[in-house]
Amino acid sequence: MSEFVTRFAPSPTGLLHLGHALSALTAHEAARAAGGRFILRIEDIDRTRCKPEFEAAIYEDLAWLGVDWAEPVRRQSDHFADYDAALRRLIDRNLVYRCFRTRKELLDDIARAPHLGAGGPEGLAYFGAALPQDAEQAMLDAGAPFAWRLSIAAARGALKGAYDALFFTEEDLDGGARREVKATPEIFGDAVIARKDLGTSYHLAAVHDDALEGVTHVIRGEDLRAAAHLHRLLQALLGYPAPTYRHHRLITDEGGRRLAKRDRAATLRALRESGVSADDVKRRLGFTD
Image (cartoon, rainbow, N blue to C red; front, side, top):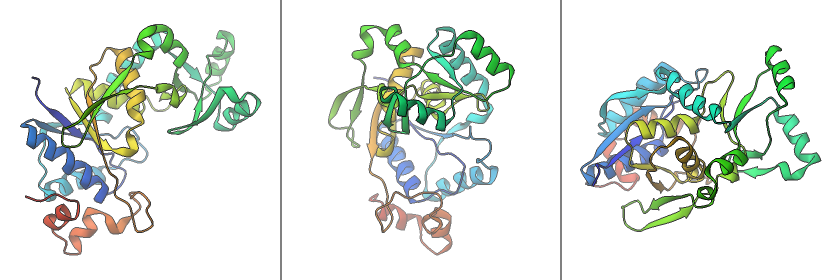
């Protein structure tokens, strides 16, 4: 049996809050229970919003919670060349295309032809195609911004019958009941997996790094359950192994809204500075020795 490997992969765009603590502790406890490894990854591909001070705070907050991790920590901003190489493999197989349309243009397209898109897990789910070669070259020569979209039609053609047979494995948080879930990546439409000004996306970078780091179990909030559908397709197209998924509940505020980094009162730093102990946080989240 392979070693159990899981990870916590925050983005340093703000201070960690109780929701992050739940995710980190859930994954850390799962690795400990299985005698496996817990990996910390810094997902900082957004170079405008990610800040060194927030990365430093991640280490401080996790250490305060009693979470330890394998070294070295992978920082995604140090590895854009890796994601470029993965994207290039998709480009070379004509599985992606450049989309120059703005959001308004996409909405106009869908208004004229509703079959081109609908609501998806990330909002607009759009199905399109590459521009004719001369038109595309004119846009490139003009320096127009674009997004690389993964073509669902091309993916179907590449995988043939295997596309409709795609599934991912999900299990309960305690590792108990397991079930096979049919993967339906088309719910994302032709998902954006990279942009001209940002060499990758969360989806492509996370899938690549999970494979590279040997992650066997992806443990994350239920708000990311839908991502498993798209990630399973990327794994199949890139020849990456498919991990098992576990999804935990979300922490909400008094109004029932999911906590966000703007909820400063719920940040681990604020709790710590107010006199709350790490044990208090763990008990509040349901972790007891």
